Image (cartoon, rainbow, N blue to C red; front, side, top):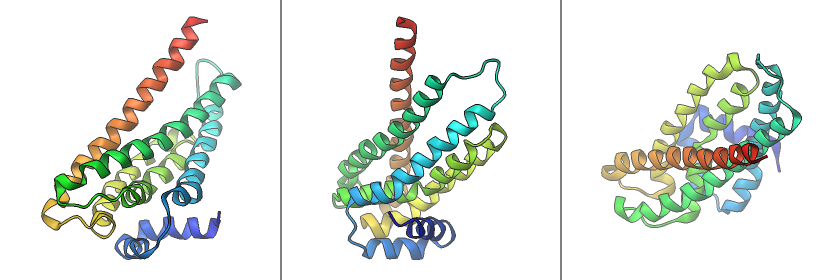
Length: 192
């Protein structure tokens, strides 16, 4: 993993997304490398800042180490699983929006467009007073909008519908996974 490449990619997506999406569209990076070298480090960093934030947050109880580690593990599993599930659904819907199926493109779009959400999580998890910064994650919608044409080759007249449906899918998958994992976790706690 090249940390400078990761930082430059994130910075360029935030500052000059149209130019960066054009660069990304000309690359031949496979989705496993993008996950390993870009998404996973940002997601893991967000989980680590979540551990710090768990200990800095004012609480009526002090979280045990088991709770903190479990929360961190789920903070890694849920976003990674969301990337896979959302990418496959978004790719499957491509023909409905005049777009050719392109699983590599769907992964690329989902991962890189999520950059603001990753950064917002990293910073927002540090302390509860920074949680307002999660609103920066909404910039992901704009990145998705800018990236969908160069990456998925979606026609302009179908772009709005595809972006809206894709974001509903991304949010629904993330929330559903969170709900399922939370219920399993709570269920196992109450079983003991």
